[in-house]
Structures are given as structure tokens and as C-alpha cells.
Length: 187
Figure 1 (cartoon, helix red, strand yellow):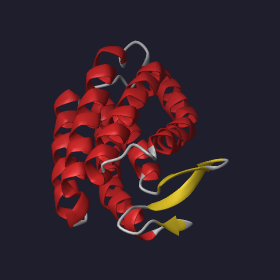
Figure 2 (cartoon, one colour):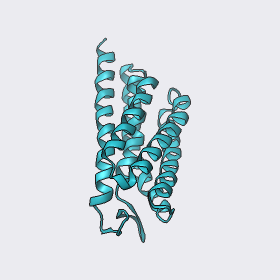
Figure 3 (cartoon, one colour):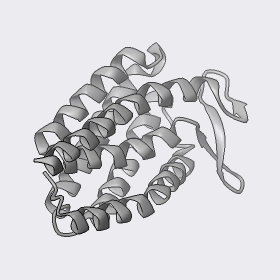
């Protein structure tokens, strides 16, 4: 009973954080960067001589957080998180990028879900990595093509999101080990 309650609380916290990544990403893309392209995104460095729209930092994190939501609250909650995220994206994205934001979010999160779901019970960390890679590539291509009609920043988008996934991996490994130690099974 206590473990189920703990799993639910952790899932709700992950869901709230996941939902917050969307408005933060949309705000970042238009307001934070070392340079802001006219009629385009604000850019941040993600590798030497490679820049990406600043929202990539939050989207990489969103892919991992959605996996945690599903692990803690179950697949239906994971799909619900995707629906909530798409709605939030539709309401907070700047008008010029709302279609791109919603489409990229929905398609990338559903791709992430499709890869993560069959792998997560046996190989949690592998599932997070594989699903995040698929999700970040889909998100990058769809968003850039729809928002800006160009894939000029696709390399930077992929690298920037991958950094966030890589930074989260040690935490995912610790989460899985702690779950095993205390007998907290995935939903």
C-alpha cells in the first residue's frame, strides 16, 4: 500500500514536470539564446559550432519524464500525459509555431510511447534510451519542417535533446535500482 502510494506520488510529480516542459520550451524558443534569428528561433550552442533552438533542452527532458509517468502510473496515464501535453502546447505555443509544436509533440511522444512500452518492464534504461532517440529524431524533423520549412537546425536539435537524455540516464539507472531494491514494480 505504501509503495503504491509512493509510485503514484512520483508519477504525479513526473506528470506535472512533464506538463511544465512544454510551456517552458515554447517560451525558450522565442526568448532565450545567444542569438535570435529574425522570424526564427533563439539559438543555443549544443556542440562546437552547432546551435539549436533553445526549446530542445526541455523537449529532451519531456521525453524522459513521459517515460517515468508511464512507469509510475501506467500506459493509459502515459497516453493521457501525451494528450495533456498536446493541449498545453496548442495553448502556449506562439501562433506562428502552434501547428508545428503540437504535431511534433504528438508524433514524437507517440513514437516514444511505441518504443518504450514493450521494452520498459525488462530493460528500463534501454527503453528510455531507445524511445528517447526515436522521439527526439521525430520531434526534430517534424518541428523544424513545419515551423521553419527547413531542416537547417536538425543536427543541433538532435544533439541538444540527446544531451538532456544523457544527463537523465544516471537518474534512470538509480531509479531502476531503487525500485528493484524496495520492490516497487512499474505500473
